[in-house]
Image (cartoon, rainbow, N blue to C red; front, side, top):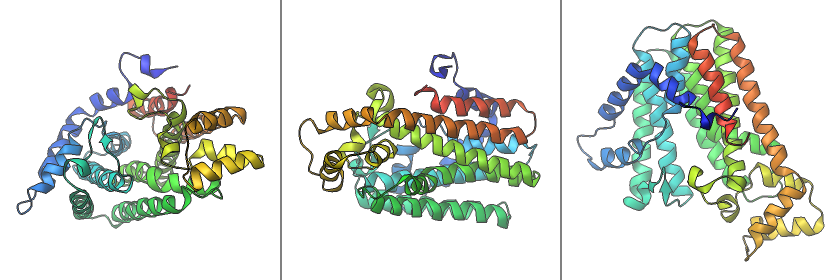
Length: 333
């Protein structure tokens, strides 16, 4: 099923179901990103926050809490915290990657400067830590603070692994678990914890978020080599040009002969890229079925995410979370 052709997408239906709570999250985001002393903070934050992101991660927190029967107010605090952590990482990522565009708009580091992006990102991380203590739960604080550390760890690991042909699928998975899946799994897990859900349900929520986040990132890496630029907002081969060793290339390198390996050393490790190299890289990916195998991995992780939901209560939200897992991989199905 290609969910892109559905009249409404599952994340849009989930947003409609959570409409009142999401409105509260948006209000809290705009209240808590304010600064009396540094007006540039809300300017930079609003540039990214209001650029039309799906709010998927905070929605996952609200959805998990709702599914587990939570009726308090702190799900809104935690969803806002998750969005602040996510926004902070995007601001930092765009500086590290020297990106010029995010969500179809110039990046904050381009609109202002690198210093502003880094410092406003730091401010949002600090705001997130202020907010994550408000529910008064040490366990919630532990989950979200650990996720913040894991995200930073994943980004630093990627710096050293991204252009090293010795990077294997195990290291790639550590990077993806760090930079992407950690916040997905924390977002879902804290929703269950705040609702005092049974431990098997909290574990299932963690497992869902973890597998969904891994699938999400694998799809993103696959689309870099076979996506529709108008839909993804990225040019085909951006990761190749930026010398990022993502899963399709890792799979091709593992099967490379000496001549092919020399090509990958020149283009990825040494960064000496010439006219026609992207086309040759695509030929090698197809030759070794690296794109097909990457697609299979993404589908397998989406299936794991859906399986995890079996331990959760029968609830309208549960079916929407199943469909979101399908939607994440719909673009490559």
